[in-house]
Length: 273
Length: 154
Length: 104
Image 1 (tube, each protein chain N blue to C red):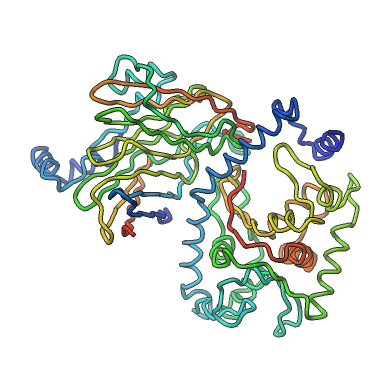
Image 2 (cartoon, rainbow over the protein chains, first blue to last red):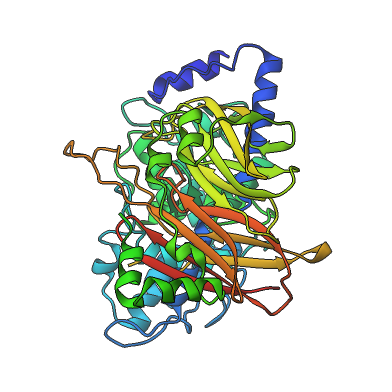
């Protein structure tokens, strides 16, 4: 209880939880919330975005008037099934580790002739009711092709191990006005914000559940959010400096989480509160 | 206002022609159904039932509402309604404490199961009513849904 | 511009076709205020029609309390694998959308 109160305070989300009266009442609440989540899973509006993304993927676009169908996301040109379960990974053509979203942008630059600057200027739809961006649609389509694939983020290449090590370091790095790290909330059991249980990344099942269910359609925002957005928003809630879209820091954190989530089954885009 | 009705009347020629087309099953009748503004503007169960053409709704155990006891987010509350009543003509879903009670109505033609589902916004914890019109009469079942986060802003 | 619907129609035991529809729509209530304090006008799907061949299998009316990106599930008798189910909607601003699915 002490831990939970503390967390509500630091995150300034101290909404009263009228149901948290007793342990049994709390368990009933958890059970009902679980049932609510199951009811939601049966019909995920992210599928609408996947459809739009597929159309975009196969459409000739950009100065080079090309589709993205030849994009190499790590399993060979044109292969998208299961890629999200094995990313981030090292790509020889750029001599660095890239996550899925970086690679999608990379393909739009190399295959279609868009500029990196125009593609990264506004990657997320952030205002209420705004149409989801092309980046979000493309990401939705590609990750949807990895449903059921087992997470196996590679660590064979030296740069992949370096990415993990940097990600781990960042995960434990304490800072910001509240002086806390990702690990402060995400490496202990029983933490939650309002009714959302926070995953403890020291436990494989927790890490798997978190990693395999992003991107996700957020019913509270009426929009699908990508993994890059998820981390961007974590940094914002931590009062850290803004996490730049596709930055090495963002990729390294995704590598860290992906390695921790090994053998989980991809199930995204998921649907969340 | 119903834009579709206006354009249809303009382009479709005479009313008789349209009526003929409808009765022949060429055009779906819904193209001519007015959106029931009075029902959607109503503030409570009784007024909704009146706006739909009934007097009162009788409580029924033959209507099942499937909804969570607690919804994590009021912006999206899954509600399904099934009825065992004979000759179901329509099903309506109402949220008592919303600014306007009526969320959705479904006409059930012969051959369609009296079993529909959608998702609604709830501004706060409230009773949810399912109003079923069957054999010309109106029936109602009620279930309380608690909302931990209101669906009209949060 | 409205995005296509996602419609799944599946023949179940007992000759009942189960239809699940996802619609892309903002479903703006008309009660929300934007950052400048101005009320955002209502914008929502009002009428939906589903047809199987020439037969209407469902008519629905929505108010603004239906959730954003609406979901609608229903089932009907008389469908066969390979048949088409068409779903159409119109909203309060006069926009329309019609999509179809094949019963699987």
